[in-house]
Structure formats: C-alpha cells, structure tokens
Image (cartoon, rainbow, N blue to C red; front, side):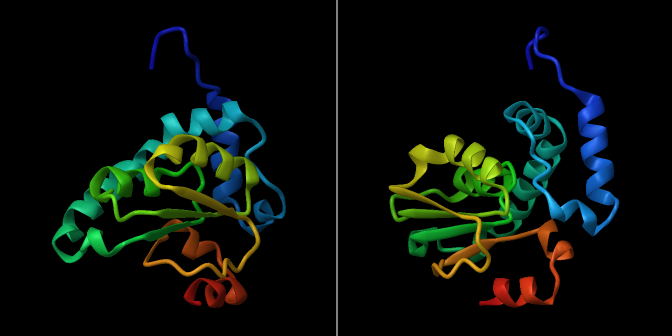
Length: 155
C-alpha cells in the first residue's frame, strides 16, 4: 500500500461488527462502495487469502488441476479464495470460473481481478447456482447458511 492510500478503518470496523453480530446483516448488501471492497480486500480480506494459500499448499498433492475445467467460488466476497486457487492451480484446462454471491458488487469486484484467468467468468447471485462445477471453493460462508442454503450448496 502506498503512503497516500488511506483505508477507512472506521467503516471496516463497522462492517466487521455487523458481520459478527448476527444474521440481520444478511438482509442487505453490506458492500456499499467500491472503496469498501478495496479496503476490505487489502486488509481483513488478505487474511482469508493467506489461509487459502496455506490450505491449497496442503491439498496440492490431492488435486489434479488438469481435470478442472469449471471452478466455483461460493460466497466469493472479494475473491480471495478463487484468486489463491488461480495462483496455485490455474492451467489451460480451467475454462470457466463461477462466482456465486448475494452481492453483485462483490462479484463485479472479483470478476475484474480474475477476468484474464479463464475463458468465461459467470456471476450468479441467485441461490442456488445450478451450473455444475468440478471444484467448489467455500469457507466461512458455511456458517451463515440456513437449511435451504446448505441444501443448495450440496446440490
């Protein structure tokens, strides 16, 4: 981060408090600006990326990335998981990346950062996403799902 770039820490603290505060936060899209997405991605979201990088290194021996033509990031947020996956496993076999999130703004943010890594990037903000994938990335979103959401994810 360059010295002239500032992060709105108050907004991030408010966002994190709302996120940790319960399910009422799910009633609206809390990504209210491109700057909020950028700030989150560079700070709190970076932690998610580091965790995904570590996890993907651990599972590397068990994943044949040449067999993966479609990868989904379910609950993509700012795209830390799919970007870590791309860095670890992207091959010419990867044709389609599916972004699934309730936030159109988050999907647009993520798509703008991965557009050159697959022939097609699809965005789905309607659950369930019925497009099949060879691999689905999902993490903290699991804790937020109700029964219908978990059923949708399993499908």
